[in-house]
Image (cartoon, rainbow, N blue to C red; front, side):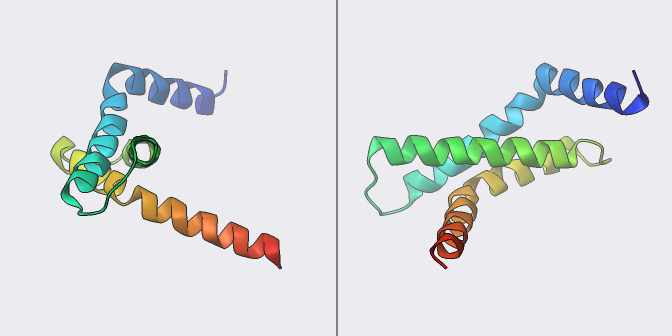
Length: 102
């Protein structure tokens, strides 16, 4: 095994121990945002947006993994990024659809 493999395994082990919480925080951030809006959403939309928040929360966790930062700040960044996840995914989706139509 080279050193990159060991680093990746260390990140995976750390994620198993507690990093998954960041994905949950991202999804909860999105859920809180949905609850606070006046828009009417069906359950499927809530689930889809919650999953998007979780995915972005996990990506944020992986990007912040090696930084020397307070866990509280990391949690806030993960939950805030999760709350903005639908706009990120919708923007990407629209750009892809726009390029495919050209």
